[in-house]
Length: 178
Image (cartoon, helix red, strand yellow):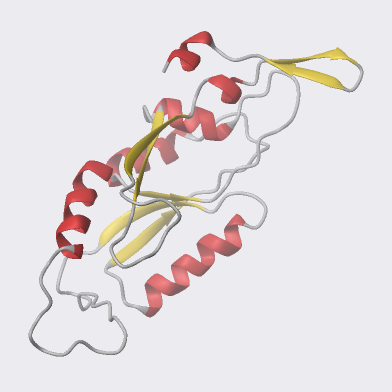
């Protein structure tokens, strides 16, 4: 997604100003319901406060009459694995809003977050970092892509207690080379 959105954002930022005076604040125009076929989004509310956050997103989308609807699935940290119907829904819809899923501590417990990333081949996150024109920052001319590996390294959960109170976390050598 980052490869597609960055050029569009840069094009919008460098577009000449219209001759018509702009309003005092920006306005987001959403298509009216029925103008476009509604899009289905898989929703996993998550654990902790995440259901409150994803619930607020649902309310906002409803208030702006966004042409979307949510397929809501229950997944929480005490499950052994993400249900297969959730994976199938994400693959079918190609969009998922996921609240945070708590990661159980200790033992050979696998994080549902990491399971989901592996199942969907989401091994890295790409973060675009660049300056916006007119916004003063400490550093100028920043335009970098940060690649974050998110299924190995610390996410593997290979840990052991060396002495009481001291835990050692092992990293996969491959993730160190990336």
